[in-house]
Image (cartoon, rainbow, N blue to C red):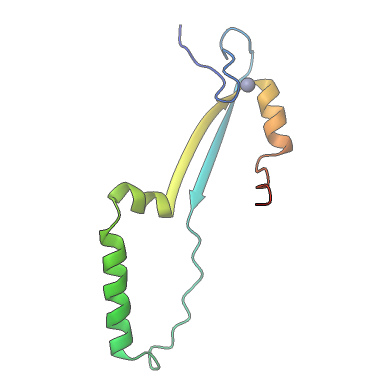
Length: 96
Ligand SMILES: [Zn+2]
């Protein structure tokens, strides 16, 4: 028997639940179209920016770079946790 359990409360989904739920969360970077006027950008500015980006990328692992633009998470939920999750899927961060 599989040990499939609710990722929120740990309850066995095969023993106690008739229905289980899957939550798929996809977080992707959202880019706005670039509004560049290439005639007004000096070539020196472009080169400096490319060098700055290359240095920033070089300090990160491939996984860190991938996580910055695309990440998918999957969870299994029992019925009770599914209802509670739908009431507040993205709780607000408390004020610092
Ligand atoms: Zn649960």
